[in-house]
Length: 395
Image (cartoon, rainbow, N blue to C red; front, side, top):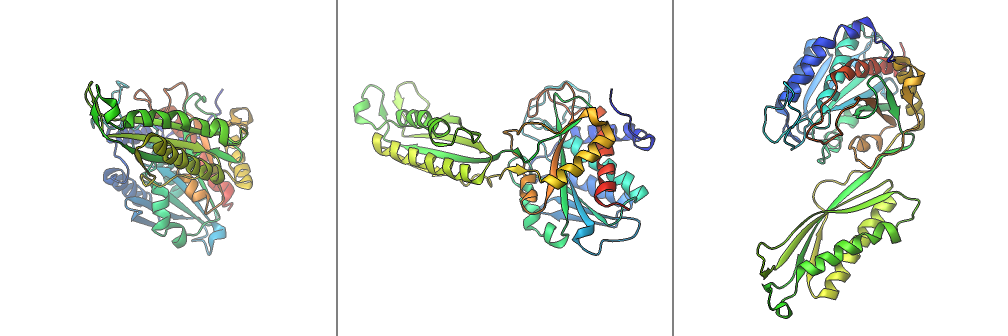
């Protein structure tokens, strides 16, 4: 059975549900989240936050909330709580009454729920202020591949508001509602991507000897790329290299001049990522030479995400808060690392912290057109944030 949440948080459930479903109906992408950011800023001001700063890293929002004894004198009494705001370019297929009202966009990763849970905690903590120090609430745009966390850091968020720790929550389908979990150490993978352009000499399909076929060369690159993980990376180091898109030519009887491919890789260390990139570039260059074509590898499509690594002490603090909310039997501290990537990794490279999971029940998987955040999970997320505040900044 799920542990009950406090009456004060349970009383918020109807309003939390309304907030979440409103955000779900109005998904926004990347850094272009003006409505979501405006709602967040207006709510924080309405809750009585001590300061609200908009436009951080483009469209991020930072809210400062001081505890009962006033503002923190230094970073040892300041902690950052983060939620992401952006949606995904996916056509929703849930059929829900609160489904996306914008064609081709939906909250398929639950960021509507993450924002709502942190807003709920912001309201509760603003009413009670039962902590000593300053909480820095970070509402971040562009988590989905555009490194919004790094943009907020580059815009001075951590320099202006240095903190002793940072925490984030993500929902997890398949984990029961009311349950929590965490991965010790490396939790989410690093990821990078390449655009590969193979240029040959086009021609008539009937006269291949008069062409230099980029399709055949591309096929050889695809096959050889699979040996990076199987024959170059240490078998004990998890890694994935995937060619996710290939396009070249339009006719049955024409050898094209050019083929474009997209490649995505995942791993859990900088060293393995460097090995993958070096080997992939070598394969492309040597294969092109063997087939008499030209190749260009462009890695400039979005900032590569580093691995998300949880810090030991902060992980234990998060576990204590989760157990206090859900009970020992509803908290797992042995989850396995996930090959998905997360840009909270940029924050955890600057500040110790923990990235944890809250159960979303029996829902479709993340990034699926039929996914929806479970409103039943909202009060548990709020309760976790409130309990965590009490533990990281004890009054």
